[in-house]
Image 1 (cartoon, rainbow, N blue to C red):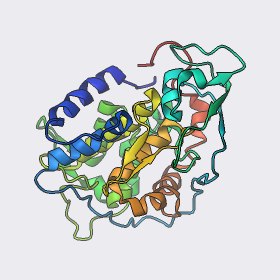
Image 2: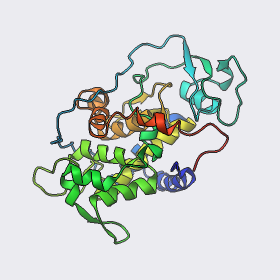
Image 3: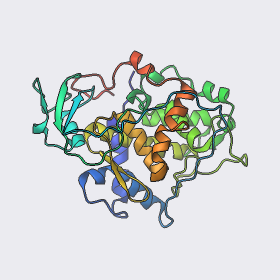
Image 4: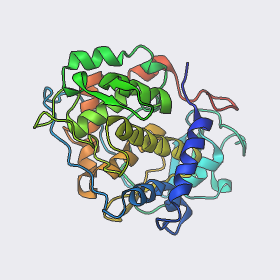
Length: 333
């Protein structure tokens, strides 16, 4: 069963963004406003102290030997040739490519509303300037809680990893005392994000899955968001999952087309990227300074490389699970 509680998710995200809108300035453009809503949320929530991510703690796991994504640095020509994927809509593609929908051409009729047929070859004028590297870094089904994670046992994995997380205990908001693995599973269930990816982000930022903090004590911000009133593993994972969803679903509907780094620099995502890659790129733009963003995606010790080393090749599982979402007029729930 595909877990995509999009209506519930959006109902939770929109009030949060609205609550801080009066306390943080919005960027001028619509795309920037949507893409950097998270920056405004984090800035307002952390005031008056500036928000600075906690530097990640090096992992004590075995050296990474898994293949890592290869960025596509080629310069796009005057025309993008794009093949439609499951979940594409004409309006979202127009926003991602920065053109009017009427300028997108194909050899067959393209419906103005609803999902486009998959595998249709489109020709789209290149109206963009600088964009991120192309080349996917993570499949969609490894970001959302999809059938590819149905047989993944969080508790068994955490216990076998033997790190700090295995013995970690925390009281969450409702007064329930949960262990580390149970917290990861709860956030995955609540926000429909892959538990594998949540573990990978935690390991990449703190080393808690396979290792331990240098002083053996749990810091209040293991992922590094440092938002006042949002201390502890449960809250940090919820913030990470929320940002992944903002990037993923925003790219799907065309409202997130760029991201903003802590130094104020912006970067437009390559229009041919998949939603899962954008989700991870968006999260890492929050957690890493601009100068280290590319290495966190493409270097030997990058998060995608670490993910592949710890959980296996992420591109093999989607072949069995199928595309997300399946073609059709309705958003899967």
